[in-house]
Image: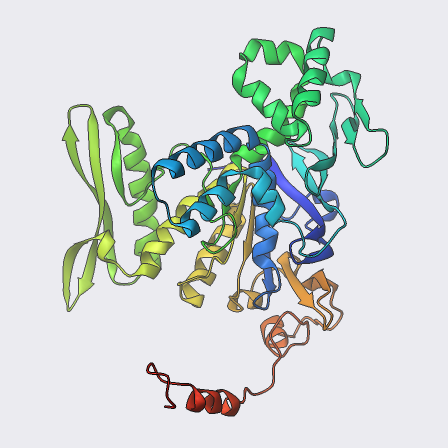
Length: 456
């Protein structure tokens, strides 16, 4: 599967975003564009998941009209059903862009939150900036205009007199320009202009969009829709977002239903599962789908033939370990990186043996045509992957954070082992703590009252 590089994140700048006061993740690779593989390290609480949330926030922001509708439906349903407050909060946080935006702000900070995303689509580089507090305050898109790069639009409400600059290259006719300005006056502030463009594209026919707007303004929207983001369950979005690519692989690789006419999806997915698991696991001899045909539908379920106690036995895949089943989720999401799109995966090593994950990632790096960005604690990869792909988040004693690529550290020589150096704390990004003294805690336990209110 060979696809030219199409969509990549080149850098991300954050100011007052969650735990980041002012940091830059710079994934640019000189004249080669952006790095295809990026592995982000840092101690617990350093902000690895906050970086993923920043990408997730951008993707959600373009869907703000749809998310607002979903939030309203949730509130209506909550009136009829006695939903637990915790569940209601989680659902609203994941569907309301206004609540999500609020959660992305640095706590106890009066200054605006600003994020800047550098990107590359089909060889054209650009950047997108948004700034917000209670509402969106500033937005700018700088990108390809057809012959050269330039500012497509800039909206600035940080000044006493708001300024709106729309490039004349944006529009195919005067009517479209007037309609868009009307949409801005109605919605901008609660929604971004990028989300307004996305709304236009969804609601109006293709021919109208093509004759009314510069086609390149939709490149970043299409890129974000293709981007696959896996957020850990405890992130504030509580989401796992899976894009449609690759389209020739099942969305649910373990079991489900598909139309009979799409049986080629089963064949392709089965080959991928078989190739991977028989190579990665010595005791797995075959992987296949059991198929049941019901009218125009195929009901499928994944099985493995596994060597157990000297005999090859057939077992349904759902009986495999949590770690092995988690591999399927990783495979499905990582395949997008083979298809020219960006995949962002938070805590990819969760529940998987370090050496297995190391082999999985190392074997796929050369085949990436898009971009794979992961956060991880797996240090074994440091022994073999290019140090230009490794980024460390360091936190000083005042809580200030710095993001640095491993190749910027002068201590690394050709014969040095980056993994050992990292674990020794020579680059930072690892927890350095004193021996914990539990004596005080034990004393507190001894003096705690029992259930009847007396001393234990």
